[in-house]
Length: 307
Image (cartoon, rainbow, N blue to C red; front, side, top):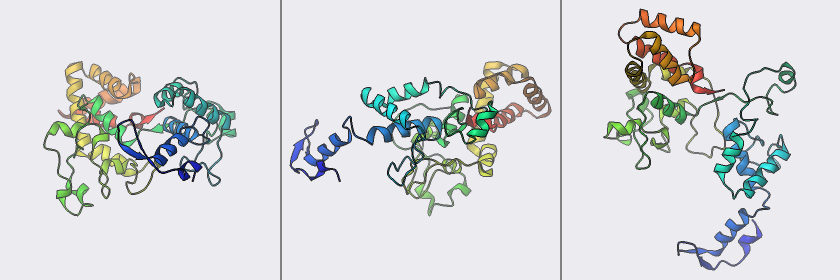
């Protein structure tokens, strides 16, 4: 324990006028000293991990002797010093990293020499291709469909689930859907997560275990993810919403509809081959053809991955 914790334990008043133990304040001051060897480094490593998918130190929960050595110690030290110099502002660090050349690189394997020398990209000669987190996939599906409820705060949201998704609960009373249907389209961060029951969609897309600390989410590619995107009632409903939005904004012209679907979901125009395949789908399917196309685009890896 730091020496700060062994000093007097008298009560002091904090900024709100409440009495707090003096040692708690001393601990906070010790942790945020500008020359503290760990606090700033640990935090900037986690911010870096968030944006790049891998930390400068590969063990974000362990900077000790049992942890991994930093890949670029000078970079870690510089980011830590900038973090302190900028008033411990996380927003400033986000801006610094997002505007860097390293973050703006492509994830393509364009350099055969670097591919052979550093196949795992430990030294960041390219960007890491990353899949969106479960909450971000949920939000993206609702946002492009024009169905996302941006209400902030309030009580946790309970989204309706299918019978087979509730089998892990002892009783259905533990998962009573919110009465207002608009609440079911809130951002994923507001969805209720019980300690002993994770929201099935989040669990499928590698949401963290709620019974243990999670310094870094795992990333898997498994069949249940594709099955959820193809068959789950929430995914089908969002495809229906997206189809309605496209029909309203692009009219009845199939070519314009295809262009609008791609621009909304993938932020680009379709290639000639993609447009040909999509037009063929629209011509062969029944009245729900546009909805089927929207569901198919939701299932493209490009929708769920950041290049």
